[in-house]
Every structure is written in C-alpha cells, then in structure tokens.
Length: 322
Ligand SMILES: NC(=O)c1ccc[n+]([C@@H]2O[C@H](COP(=O)([O-])OP(=O)(O)OC[C@H]3O[C@@H](n4cnc5c(N)ncnc54)[C@H](O)[C@@H]3O)[C@@H](O)[C@H]2O)c1
Image 1 (cartoon, rainbow, N blue to C red):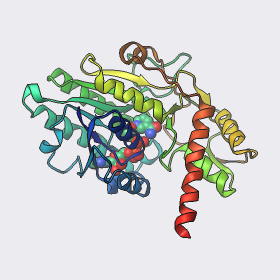
Image 2 (spheres, rainbow, N blue to C red):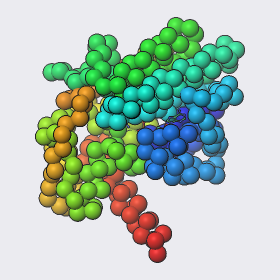
Image 3 (tube, rainbow, N blue to C red):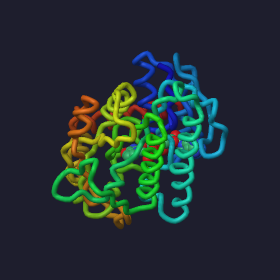
C-alpha cells in the first residue's frame, strides 16, 4: 500500500512511519518541522527519515500549501497537528485552531476532491482529552464529550469535520489516543521531563499533587493500533479509543520510573494546569472488537524502554561532543 503519514517528524508519526515501512508499505512522510510544538525534537525526527528505504519525505504546511498532489494514496494517517493541553492556552489557542482544525479541514477537502474510487482511507488522530475527566468507569466512545481546554476543543472540531467527511463519502476513522509515552516522547510531556530531571540530578517537576491518573499507552502499542486501523474495514466516521485499560496515578508511575533508574523520588510540585483531566480511562472494548487490538505493554516495561532511549541519547551526544 502507498500510505501518507502526516506529522511524520513527530513522536507518534515517526513510530508509525517506521512500523509501516517495516511492514513493507511505501510511505510518503509529510511534515513542516518548523511548525511543531517542539521543533528541536521534530527537526531530528525529520532528519532521521532521510534516505530510509521505502520512505519519501515531503515538507508541506497542511494549513497553507496545495495538498492535491499529497493525497494520491491508498491511505492517509493524519497525525500532524499542535498537541498539548498546557500550551493551548493564550497564544496557543490560535495555533491549535490553525494546525489542528484548519489543517484537518484542508486535508479532508483535498481527499474529497479525488475521484470517488481513488479516495484514500483516512485515519485521523484525536485525543482522550475530548472526554474531559473520566468518572467512576472507563470512557466509552459514545460518552458525551466535555472538552476543557482550547486543545480539546480543537480536537472535538477535528472529530466533527472527520464525521462530516464520512457522511460525504470518505472512509474516515478517528483514533482517540490516551497519554502516549515511550522512545522519542515529546520533550514537553511528563515522563520525558521526569527522566531528564533525574538524569540531570534535579527534582522531578510534577504538576499538582501526583494523584491524577492516566491510561498511559506505549507508543509501540499505539503504532500497532494505527496500522490495524489502516488495514481494517470500519464503519465510516467511527471513533475508537486507543488506550491502556488500567489507569495509573502519576505518583505511582514516578515510583516505577525512579525504581528503574535506581534513585529516590525527589519531587518539585508545580501549579496544576488548567483543563488537565483528573483521570483518563480508556474503555478498550471497541478497539478489541473492531481492530483486534488491546494494549500489550505494562507501564514498568514501557518506562524501562523510554529510559533506555534517554540514556542512549546522552551517550550519543557525548560521543558527538568528543
Ligand atoms: N502524544 C500523545 O500523548 C497524544 C495523545 C493524544 C493525541 N495525540 C495527537 O497525536 C498527534 C501526534 O502527536 P505527537 O505527540 O506525535 O505530536 P508531535 O508534535 O511530536 O508531532 C506532530 C507533528 O505535526 C507537525 N505539524 C504541526 N503542524 C503542521 C502543519 N501545519 N503542517 C504539517 N505538519 C505539521 C509537527 O511538525 C510535528 O512533527 C497529534 O495530532 C496529537 O494531538 C497525541
């Protein structure tokens, strides 16, 4: 299959690109690394894909450039966008609107402009944040949405556009990702900040009291679910949770993480972020039924995997510095 991956320079996009090319697909990797929330991570993420067999890179801003030539594919995995609840307040609101909503609208319009039999299947990244905080049971896909930040509001609009495109004849599917972690995690995300703090000998910067809980989901599992969504025949416009079914408190995750690193947990509490859910909790039933997918990676092993990546990065930097 010929598959376009938007946001291929990013954290999840890089892993999905690797998984697709390992599975023998031809990948058209699309990104505008300068637009990333963390450009210092996206630029090496983009460079990493250069010269990779079966992967062609195209630099394009989805909110601005002509997309007609980009959508000539069997499938599109649309991961490009402006992630993050915290950074979506203030000036971030317009950026979330531009790189999530406008970019998605333009991409879907370009797909709809293809002759009907040549229209690609489109897998679109959404987020657990559309639910707001989970209650006493896991969130199912048909629960009412309660977005509590400009980022979450932008993803609700992305979902509306994606469902509308399905009604207009595109084969679209929405994947609601839950707190993704693992190698190459974005530098603004919790585990990345925690591991770097420990390796630097600093206290861990924790927003709030550490009692929040998350369906932390390893990026390898997320890539597997995304590939399954590319291959499956699914009801057009459907949303599917991609999340680990067992939420873990941030405090417990820190204990696991410092246990793997072999240091005591020294925490510096920071003001909680407005709009940050107290709990995210994925009901895994629909993903199991429609994709044959459930998260496989337990948090302890997944964190060990991420920590190895951080250590490797430091060794690499030391070697480069001579
Ligand atoms: N990481 C998570 O835990 C998580 C959770 C839920 C949803 N998501 C969603 O998954 C997707 C990928 O997240 P990520 O963590 O890999 O983020 P990321 O920032 O690492 O990757 C996003 C990529 O999109 C690119 N991009 C941004 N605007 C663009 C534009 N206008 N044109 C072309 N490229 C553009 C960036 O350069 C970046 O490389 C996002 O849509 C995000 O909202 C992520």
